[in-house]
Image 1 (cartoon, rainbow, N blue to C red):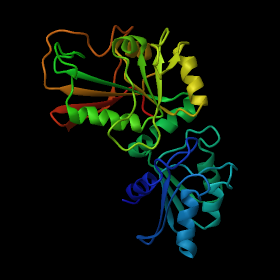
Image 2 (cartoon, rainbow, N blue to C red; image 1 turned 90 degrees about the vertical axis):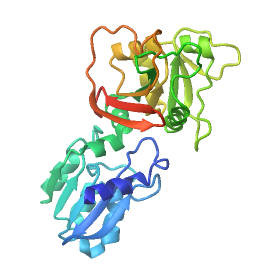
Image 3 (cartoon, one colour; image 1 turned 30 degrees about the horizontal axis):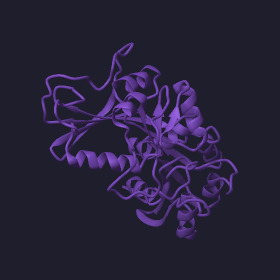
Length: 314
């Protein structure tokens, strides 16, 4: 329960934490009682562990610290959290997951153990999922790529005579996904056919995502999309260097196949509508080989069903 609480606390930083940092929550427990809580709230605030330790005060001595992510072991804008944890007299640390940041990557745990602190790493899926975009961005040097597609029950991405495949609740969810993404992209085939705006509309949004088109130009006159015409790996690396951690791919089957062939898709979202189209393309064009997906889940969205699965676990 304490790690679940730490995950809840970490979520308080969503939308406030700068792109270079993950969400982190921490709970200090002594003799079964929560004596300290903390979360990282963004630049200028204390790290989650330090906030929880300050809240606990002297009751941190001999207590257990539950934290969603491995405490840092390097000097940044603040001293290493691992040192603060050890200095506070924490006896045991239970971490949701390790930190893939090359500056950390086990060093925090090693520092704690060297100071006599017992360490347990749960490798909790929810802790990985909470920072999935940041984990891929920091460890692989590219954005976390989610491929979103709507299709009929017979696997078609178009319905003859209809503009839409999915229902209104699913389309609203897509706008929420855009609002939560750093960038949204389609292929030039979609640009030429639909000239999409790719903005998040009708939902709460702090900053509109960057809107991209992959492929050969030119873009239509008046288009506000950014053209990305180089090799996919190079384009994603450049976007990562500009702070883009998450990319929502809304392109058609050809663009999706290109990303899958280059092994650049991490997550798949499929909105399945209760419709039989009878004809039309599928969600992905020809692939060099089948791709296995993991951690499949399903949820109803209006009359549709949203299937979520991972190609790579973050």
